[in-house]
Length: 322
Length: 315
Image 1: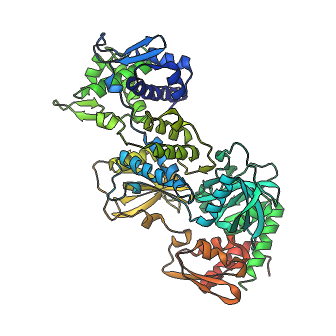
Image 2: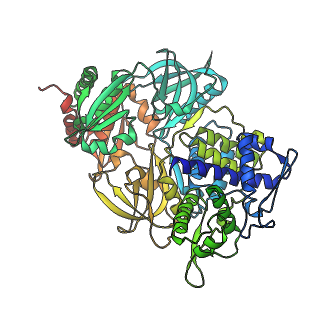
């Protein structure tokens, strides 16, 4: 769809939504419509003036949509066929349904029951009568993230308290204890992460909930930022300045799935079918573990410090097998 | 006349009309189309139909009594059914719309349709500290969901894990999001078996196949997607024993509750895992560091050393 067509589609969708509202609420005002549908008043008036020219074949006085302004009040008649909104598009339904299923898994969510009831109704509206289970048509499965940690983290979030966690960071073999100020919970790459200020490093960090060994709510206050923009943490990635740029070359086989699972920042195909990918790693350890997991499907690991770390890990693991 | 007016006229006419209208009727009767140039009409009508269908407006084609294609928008399929959503349920959906990442605008647009009558404060955004990235911006999900809900078979080109491309014919049963990816589960018509397809590996658009189908009563989407990477593969009926040393004994206790755990030497915990892919098992174990050791079978241990080979100094 061209950009222009996209704009036209959005405008038309908006008109097909505000008409039912105005028809059902005769005497509504431009101010109310503008607030409710979050569009500037002048655009709203343009929309209504446009509707005024449309209607049914014949296009006489009895066929055209009748828009009447009485001072500030708006009356729309002769458009009964537009008196109810258009059903959800598949994209709208999927966004609501999948998002709802994901957060319905949070254990300490007060609204969980309401949400589940709403999703069942939404499923019925979609016609998803797949036998006994309306929910079978779309299913969001997150890896089992320990509920007891999610619960503690949610309390920390709602009560603005620090949480003490024992955490196994990637490629460490022992969990380290730290206090974090939780800012938010983000489900990405199929798992829950907690985002927050890590007192151990003094930095903003993202922690995988399944790698938390223990969690405890403390009395120490937390000061989360006023706005939490979860969108920043898609792909389990925090755009900090001080990260290591890791470049590796991956085999044609690995290239087929790699970018579905790892936040690749840049990539290019090499003449022999391998692919060079660039990722960000906080420190060398994450990149080293990633390279090591790929085994002979990876070559040319850069920078040298990451390769060195990977060799160190390999030696340590191999000792158990010799 | 502007195109948007013509589109509104088309929707109004096809929605209000008691019987389907042929292209000739649309050309001569609907304002904005009226022209003697049949070819020019055909082009704009095709474009308009595609645009409206993309917005989710159900324009259907039926044969009229003279066997000519005729068009109608069935009111039942156009209008949002009354879901009788209670205020608390709408508020909960508001949370879902705010939490879903990447497609928040679409979720909000959908919510507006659902809450046309709700008081304004039901729509005001609460302070949400969750986000859920469900990769819902993939463009093929919409058409796949439509097909699935209408139970219409589909065809597409698919690239399997080994890089081979083939044309597939499927009766879609379910869309499952797992490990950050969407999978389409359904009956592969050519193979007459339920298969799962990663949506990101579909290499064509989705085209409809003829006919309708039913989803079997005993269909369970989890049975086809709830597997770990090491359970997918060619190796038959292998059982691996993996030991977590004292420092990491909590890991399987917390994260692998469905597998049999036993106490091992020196405070370790051993877990028995069904395995069909040794490489995936080895790669997973490497990611957990040197506190984890595959104890059994011997071929998995050899596989581990081979895997680490490129990173080990020559003896």
